[in-house]
Image (tube, rainbow, N blue to C red; front, side, top):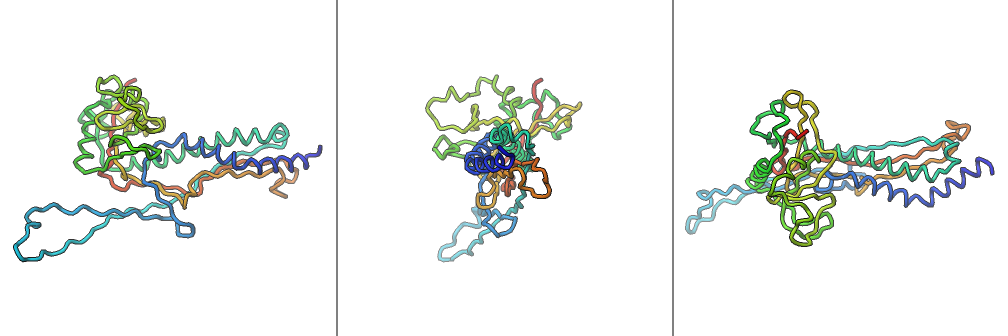
Length: 323
């Protein structure tokens, strides 16, 4: 069989399997998404620019003196006030080259493996983009009573006291709690905490820690949920932010995020933020590949952005961890 016939058959098979590879790519990418899971989702309609605007109404000031009514006198009306946050989407993508020799040994196998590798890579990139946007806030709590990152020691670990302080901050700022899981099933109201495995290692020795297997009923839980404390549900991420060597004595500083609903937002273009498989067979490059030696397997995120919507509703706890 000639090389050209092999190319045609490979291209035909790849086309028929495209939906499978798209799904495999997306499913692999989703396994990396922890930070992006809890943001307010927003899509930009096609041909509507690269920026999206989030808006929220500010609460009215509860001033008892100003709101006291005088008999028979109509008071002045109040004006609605809005805050707005803008985000601009970006594209992300990567590809691999497949040689004609590798193609002859099983091109679809390469696509299958490549879909998993590219999905994990792009999923991690989206996780980092979202995580870094969340960590850009100024609502910071330093463990152990410290007042700056460079003063933190490795012994300034995440404790239940630090979690309680974060919960107090969110409650005082009237941060709205979550009350469903990622499938939309109702559950007990809670805040969410995303933290590193090192952080939860230090917390799990506390007798107040309640692991998922100890929940009293068949409560709906999040994918990756490991336990809860004081109305906070904990989800681990291996991509949680670490400020390497930025603590006292070059200690690593970990960032643990505790937040309420609508604290941050994630944007794509009308659902187009999902990853897309792009496959070009041997010879598709024309004169740029005169000997039909190269095919490519790529993946692209058409558009994505993340931004904090209400900094008061997201607390970043910076702390050390046990060795």
